[in-house]
Image 1 (cartoon, rainbow, N blue to C red):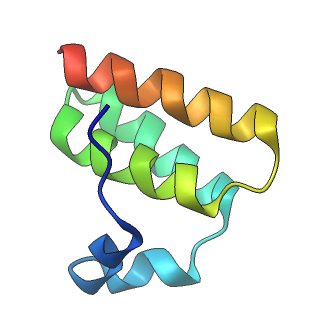
Image 2 (cartoon, rainbow, N blue to C red; image 1 turned 120 degrees about the vertical axis):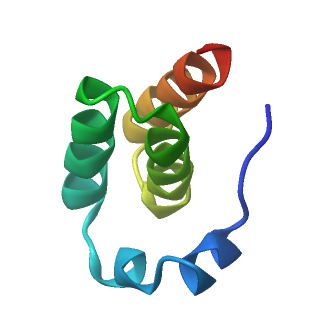
Amino acid sequence: MAYHSPDVTLHYPYLRRMSWAQITAAAEDAEIHHDYARALILWQHAYHAATLTLNKNLAVAKIDFCIKL
């Protein structure tokens, strides 16, 4: 699975100030609008920001989904 490193925040500095819930909400919004490239970046950042295993598993599933589309 291809992940962006946390250095993606260099291009999206606002991600550092967002909570996991805000990042995932933005990722889901991007999916609804069929912007899977943006959703992929957001889910990858959500994975790195997650502290719970459950949240990491959700992020991995969403990353796989975005990659397949």
